[in-house]
Image 1 (tube, rainbow, N blue to C red):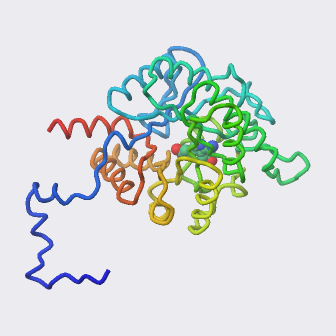
Image 2 (cartoon, helix red, strand yellow):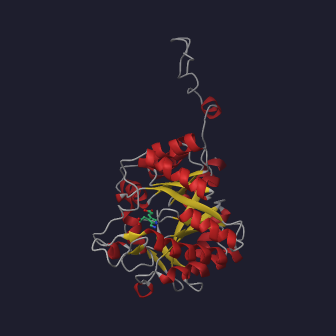
Image 3 (cartoon, rainbow, N blue to C red):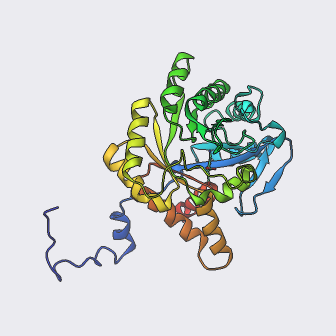
Length: 341
Ligand code: PBG
């Protein structure tokens, strides 16, 4: 920028900040319910609500209770839910076959949601970790003493899982596994099977983060993963150029939406993706970020509402078109209250 503002007192930056009207007029970014995706944990059974200890205000619910959550989401103007299944140990296996069972939990929930709330977007997670007995997102090489997660063998499983979700009526399939080539593989399969409208939300820049801890408690995969880690497929938090390559590959392979995950510690990545690639960009404010804000609020150390809304607005400023957040329902409610004055 070559423009240099005139010196003080011609320029007084505080003039525009003096009154609410001029602050409102120069506000560059706004958060609205349209920006929010609400992640939900669903389990088998009926009449069930289990609180997640490390995520106050978040629970795992059975389908009947999820329908009430969906109804509230619609009434608050939230565009979409992201489904995460809690799978019982008896349905986990080394080959993750439950992941593409057409009568499994996810396809049944998708069908129920789409028939009751056709206008509500339904996003499904494509990854094997809820279904593997070892908690990894892919299939493990039995011959490898270090338990390497096999790429190409996993692609075949992810393809079956994505097709199963699309057949059940999922609007968006969201591969969060970080295998190479999965977007292209899934896109080709969707097209070949007539699912030409199914959107792909690629978790393109998904980091091997320690902020996922509470989520792994919520879905019960922490115990299965044990001391294992996901360093051979999720990205190194030290890297930024690599994220741009990942998103560029997913653009070429046919994704429609692009996720950066986690969120707040990675706002620089959100900004780079938006500025350098100009694609629909999303950020995932993950479980650990939610837990930190909640814990501080519960201690009376932070104002929950003000801090949550500030954090969500910061995603917009960084360039995100939408935010996947456990605060979605509360945030939509707060925004509605603010609009009502
Ligand atoms: C894995 C998956 C993860 C999250 C959602 N799906 C991370 C992981 O276990 O590696 C984390 C979300 C969160 O922390 O809120 N497919």
